[in-house]
Image (cartoon, rainbow, N blue to C red):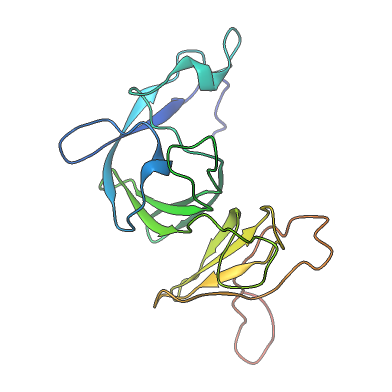
Length: 191
């Protein structure tokens, strides 16, 4: 196995465009699940950010911004990416989005979107700031949240039902790292 050196590979930022070729400045503007953009990549000039912070080196329309890009999961031949939330600082407030980047097709598609949760401290179907994600090989998603409210990991079923599966009663630490485990039949061993 060969190790990559400090200057190997490319350091690039994502740029999304709509079907007409218009650059998308901010993913938080998207409200319709199923919206798909073309993806290209823009080189970041100073990969080590010696002179200028990375986020300030390239800006829209050369790149597309995402609010609180946090969790990601590789599955189904691509990457699921979570934008945790966008509130007052955003063009369109929301309490979480899940995107799917298909590198073979060079596309980014909005898979899930949670509207602005007016009552994050209340139990219910609203979610608040998901950041960790796990995608089931059988369909469905587990999201762990660390927003303003009760920090409840939730599951999104393939038939679009969303429901909590646990809750952190202490709310002193976020729940992180949800995973699906597969057990070997009859053994109880994880495979």
